[in-house]
Image 1 (spheres, rainbow, N blue to C red):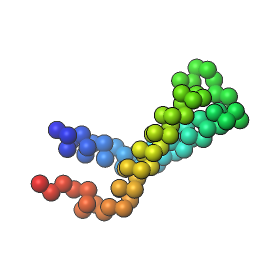
Image 2: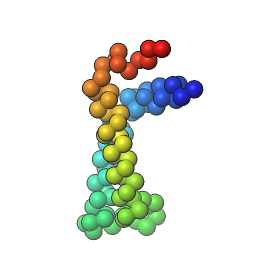
Image 3: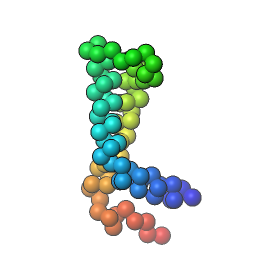
Length: 83
């Protein structure tokens, strides 16, 4: 069961890699600019100021640290499970 979930997450991250990466960078830049006071995000935006800074840092650490290097460094044979 967990193997199927991991395979789905891996396939999703490979298929949407560029979109997720652009979204991650845009979210990080907007949140940092809001936190620094360069821009002011609308109050309706759920993740503004400090409340948005922590999740974006954690998201980018996870996204850029886990699926990206693992998929780029390892070849297709390393991503297949041998049971």
